[in-house]
Length: 307
Ligand code: NCD
Image 1 (cartoon, rainbow, N blue to C red):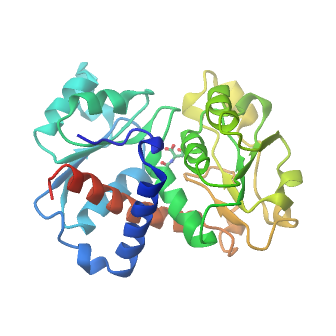
Image 2 (cartoon, rainbow, N blue to C red):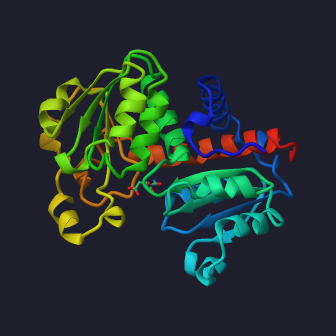
């Protein structure tokens, strides 16, 4: 049973295929409106979410399917001490596919080892978030036409930001990508990502604390929120939370065709004054997330022989 835990579960050819399907859905939505009739998606969200959960649900509805699930761990039997394994076995009796978000790294993997239907990781702690990366990839592809040769700035909480870890993994497989890692000292990219992904694949990267100095070189600027829920103490969070605030002034030296992405939710990282700048892509990213999740649900249900 094929599940999706990590973005590396997909080959580059499969990522391209998912992007092509999403582009076709955008052009020909009617063709897809009934494909999942009678099928059910379960959304098991043990952590807060707006976009990821609702876009999974919207995706399934737009494919003609139905949705069940919960959006708070304390409204499920997890609050009574049920294990992830038992929850996964149980939900497999009701649904054809599961999307799960959990605060613990590895939770989706445990679920996938016990479910009898495909499991999609909708975020596991500070580890990874493959479907956000699918949204990011479609956004970059639509803005830039491709991935090769881009200079990608990742800014903010690179330590706990699971979307950053998954995006680096995905982009590292395209040609001539160059990363600029912009963060406070305390929130630098974990060394396992640096060693196992960047250094292992000889991918050029620089690390800096200075967003404005990096700005002129960037084709993509991926802003992120400081991940309050992963901090051990509130004081550190308060000290670091406003490390980077993108304002129109800071874009003075940016390329005219820069694309600004953010997985959202934004707290203070991007001034609302930038929302109408043509370079702002973060709400397009939200919509792209729905199309990519439609493509993903279709692929997994087809491979499982469910549709
Ligand atoms: C991200 C997440 O949950 O990791 N949000 C999302 O899914 N769009 C980013 C974040 O919470 O900062």
